[in-house]
Length: 116
Image (cartoon, rainbow, N blue to C red):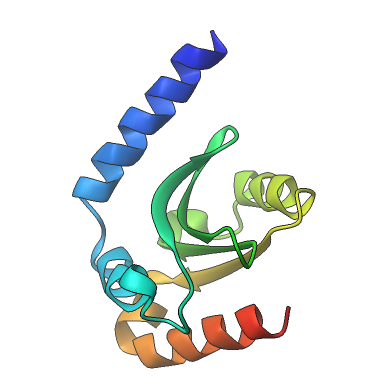
């Protein structure tokens, strides 16, 4: 049963990688290939019962690009608590924030990652 759920998450993550939002694509272009301070990020990575948008395991940093459906989301709070309890920090950016000020998002990611 757990293997079936894990495989379902992997298939869903693969599908999400093929159809990113504009903001996710912009963020990925900044993060991929160790472009940001040499940090290695993975995208749409299954972790436990969730799929995270971007993760740098070395820095224990998760980055989420959120649309309006995430406004005041109780499930996001539960999810963040799950990852926090495992030592991960979570950064959330609104999609329009990334689209309007990608450089600012990148600088914030660097600041948080290097303050560890």
